[in-house]
Length: 394
Image 1 (cartoon, rainbow, N blue to C red):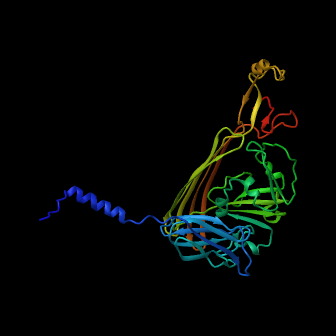
Image 2 (cartoon, one colour):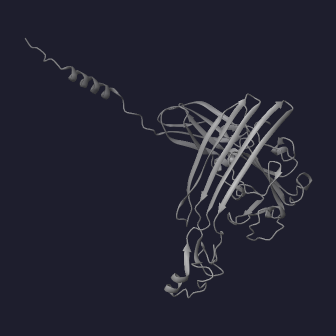
Image 3 (tube, rainbow, N blue to C red):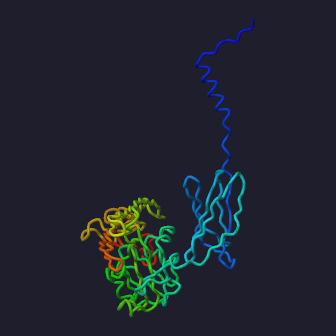
């Protein structure tokens, strides 16, 4: 009689585990793709529209339509997805239930309709809420979502996205020159006067408060740029226009906590820069009372070298023979990346809705800016390099 040899319990477990491993099919390669086009109600393509792809677990990827109004997401795993499309001036559009296998999924054209009042950009430059398209003045409004998506940090960067607005960046040490529609009433100079912007024809406002400041753009509702004379509503100093910073107000219904951070590099700089902060929103009484706060720190490592600083002011020779290495070393020293900037900005606001017709907002804002040397070079005056200053003093 043939008798099968008995197997030990450990051998049985190992065989069972091996069977399970062999039975699991290999994971499908993530080669699927979702593509499509975005059009308006007339069938014209919509370039520059934001497109968000959401998977079944809530993970998101973002893209933007190209000049032909098209977008695509590649390298997708099989599963169910949804696509959301948004564009300033239009209402958002969403496509759900997109099933992806291992190939390409071409979506039908996604049509954006003109936004209704609650969906479009609403401005308050005329002292009342109205659609941007219906405002009786020339206004360029950039929403907080656009600021975050494009990584806009200050007014200089905002001007690159705002037709009719030009900002001459003179560095953190100087007072930037704001030009609206080519109109400017002051000389282009390196003034360090804090209130210099009051006299150049373009005034800046924090809400409705005139304040000459290049505000760091964090937790901002929108920035309104009013082009053309604004003396009727905003008084003197607005011959060319006005810029209004509008921070986000507290929300008495939804709590929120957000941490953000950005690490960046500058050409001709020896170190990396950082931009980090946090925002919170705390409802204290439903639909009545809420507290909101934000704090950020921006650290710019600088990129201008000061190669001709006096070692001992009043003693060292300021004009040694530059061909004499020993004389240069004895009298001059070098300070690399001298135009640094360290800015801490914060705001805290408390909103109280006493009645449907009576509300109050208490807000405190602070921006502490510590800067190094001027952002200047003397390539033409003293034949230095493009990123080198010839000043003898910082």
